[in-house]
Image (tube, rainbow, N blue to C red):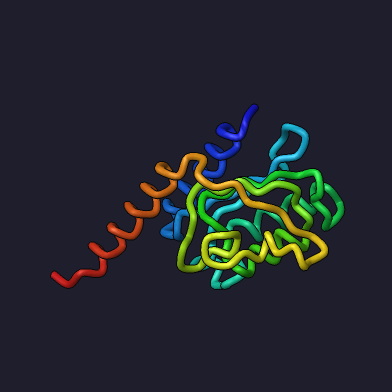
Length: 154
């Protein structure tokens, strides 16, 4: 299995979020050729600002591993993580980060700020951008267009 396979799985997670009227962002964590954590945004239904796809996937992966350290894992996520999620990625010591779509407004892995790549910190990594970005962009674009249509008064 390759990067594309795992990113497709992250996109499938984003599609689940969309079905639940959540912002369609999905994430999977791979270790040794197996997905050990997956998640999608659940902030509205979960009534929590902490229920981001990355946090949910990290939480599931750490339970599988039995440790907070995910140092031999790769994270695949459909949109660039925010500062909260970037901090969790660094604290969990994820080895590799593959991102479909950059977030120039809130991204914290290189587009706006670069928490994950800050070499003054004990742990850091360089994010890889662009894998399946068009698919991820379409999901987000369709979601927000639909949201605006539903909010328009008749």
